[in-house]
Length: 111
Image 1: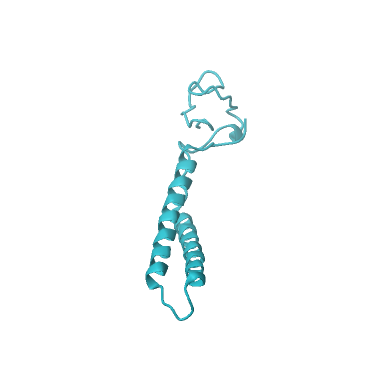
Image 2 (image 1 turned 30 degrees about the horizontal axis):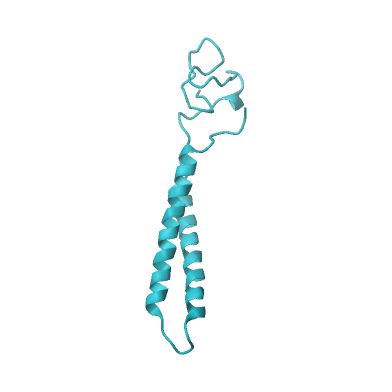
């Protein structure tokens, strides 16, 4: 039994309040406490395909933009490769922002 806000171990406490953060709980009501000692991280089976999809989408959008700016009959292979690399970098930044948000964001919205 762990606090919903800070995941402090609530076993054996005399009062129904977390000593770490002050959040109240009812030992008989599992909705007021967590069974896990910490917030579970997203599975790589879920996270990686989402990030791959975002990278693929950005790559296609950037490639279309480069193709629309290339003169008829011209070749701009380097610009397409650069756009794919830019999409990859943006996806990495987006991934880091998501993971930071997940790690430090609000854990539960219930009071």
